[in-house]
Length: 97
Length: 168
Image (cartoon, rainbow over all chains, first blue to last red; front, side, top):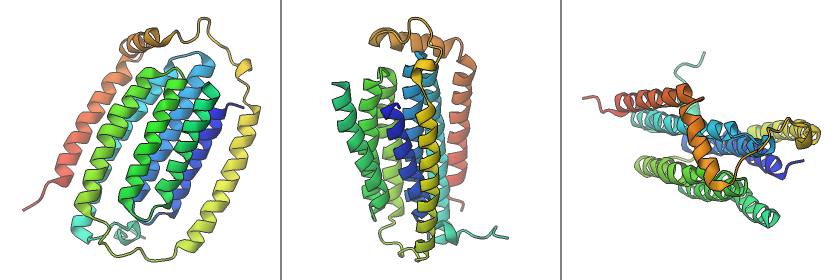
């Protein structure tokens, strides 16, 4: 069993737990970053086990997507806070059926 | 040596990750996440991925997390009303789901055997060569995804400007 994969799994689970438990969009977002980072660690670990560089290219692409996601997500949060004065996702329930 | 580095920085990364979730104050969560990203960058170095480690520190811990900290300071969630408490049920659900995921993924990882993988002859070359190989790969075989990321970034920039603009 590869220890890096175990660490990646644990980091991912901590991130998932935080995403479910937290009641603040900013904190939930940080947990998403944690999960992405855990996935990156797994990619690099696999890249070394396979002796291939493609895994590292995937990490590069994941980082670009994370940057774009962070920018758009934070902008959405600013708009949410301006309109509702809240960061609790439960308060943004206009579209709730 | 590699084992020592793994346990030292892996432990720091894990503790920092738990701290991200455990902190009440989002600002401290973000700072813990920076620590976690930094120690994972060291692990990337240990995994023979120097370029990824550098990008992790410069782009992730540097640029993205600074953006986070700016937004946290703009929104100032410390003064915002404390979250309503129906947290208990969600915590139990999270624990149960996490346990299931833990069992499933541990089973998968026990079955994972690196020796059985089709290892390409040569493997990843020594440090400097690996970076130049990565660059070559990025601009030949993965040119299309690479260019697609620039379009993605452009779209993200436009989206952010449209979203965050003050309407008067």
